[in-house]
Image 1 (cartoon, one colour):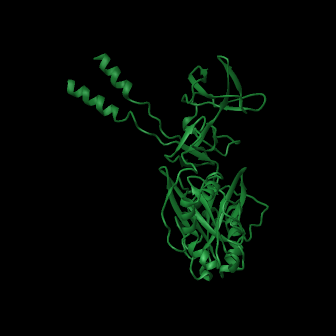
Image 2 (tube, helix red, strand yellow):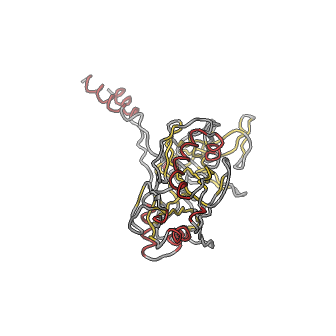
Image 3 (cartoon, rainbow over the protein chains, first blue to last red):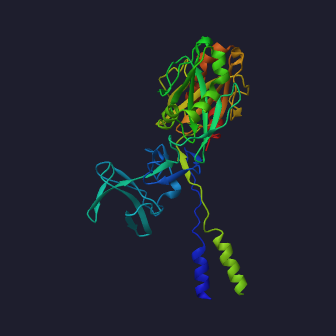
Length: 244
Length: 144
């Protein structure tokens, strides 16, 4: 009877409820095609590191993976901050014991900007979790053809849903060129140049699409041009994805 | 009794492979008034500083109408008659992306092209009721 109860209890997972964000933060749920890992693979796009603890220094954080045993982060005298996690994400990893339990620090091979550790003759460095997006410019996506005169366009790449926007501007360019901001002319007829951008699952820079002979034609056709180029033109697609 | 225990095991296993969403907390808050030295005229993007967080909003003139500081849209449209593109809509693109939120209706399309980016900027850097309302709507419509 006791053995059966132990077996049953061992199958019940420890409940992990999504943590609430502290005051001054908004809560965003991670999309299913974004994974958390100490290192992103070569086929993934690294969206950046995420500390476990929300502090004045962090723009964003993932509190529901943080170590909750009274120790948030370790800070070295040299100013390196090491996040402690409730889960072991790497092998090997550092185990930080407290009176209340154990927290984990990610280790990845090689020297790095974190704290460097030598273990069994191999050098590792500490790292935070990274958001890894399953998308690659070498994968040909499928796209939907947007209606005339809309601004949004959509695509799917290896099960990742993509939303983009378009803009007609007076900033010129060529396919492959990118911009962080566009000039929108008060003289409407000058806004001949179609630019495209991905906004979801994360934002890219503006990538040049095409030049039209009339601004009204640009307004009509730009979103469709963005979708078409994203599917057919590797240079355009790389400019977008590599600028995420 | 054996059937009862097997049933408990089966029910428990239904929860064994559950996937729990990860919550990401982004340091943005509607009461926070942002700041910038940029005037953001004639521009698509405007970047402001929101309590240390670099935040970029995109402004877009469209023919899609709405209620200022209130209406939300997933997609907006332009008119073949480009003089109809007088409605300024704004969306967050950094550090998170949002849906489009209506900001202002201008007298002319040229006026919208000139001012829309600045209108989005003003919604982030001023503390009038309409600006706080705009930011509340914006932050409540994040694209996940």
